[in-house]
Structure formats: structure tokens, C-alpha cells
Image (cartoon, rainbow, N blue to C red; front, top):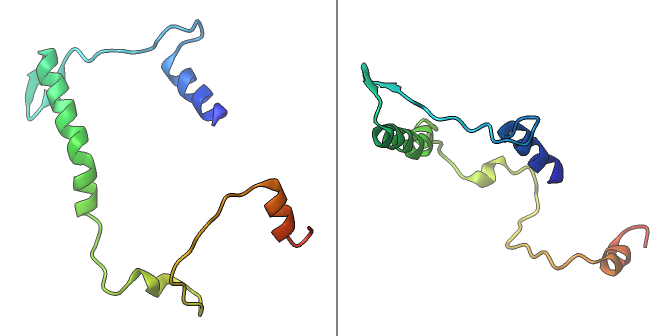
Length: 96
């Protein structure tokens, strides 16, 4: 996790710790150029709020059940995972 945040900070900041944030001064949209920051922000919001639903709409529908993809003869009705602590792991491991 620490490495992930270091990578994000390297992308966001330059070598001197300053933010690399940049602004968009103009945006081409539907053969017109937007320059008003509010309109640009609204177009970005519109694009990013529709990305998930647009991608989801492209996922083909399948027949059958998700269980058709499980390769086991065991029928699981439920699963419960308890707390993991060193004593329990040692007791329940093959080496304990």
C-alpha cells in the first residue's frame, strides 16, 4: 500500500515536491471549442459520470448462472471467515 501511495505522489508531484496539477484552458467538444471553466468542468463531469454505464452497456448478456463457471462438486450454501490471529492460524495449519 505504501508503494502505491509513493507512486501516486510521484505522478502528482515534481522532483521538488510541487504539485503538477494543470488546468484545461479549452476543450474541443462536438466541433466547438469550450473556454469557460464551468462548461469545461461540466463536460468532464458528464464524460466521467457516463463512463461506467456506457461500459456496462457493452457487456454482453449471458444465459445460465455464475455457478456454471465453478469447477467443483462441492455445494456451498454459505461461507464464514472468522478472525485470523497467529494462535488460530498455527492451530489450524498443517504445521501447527
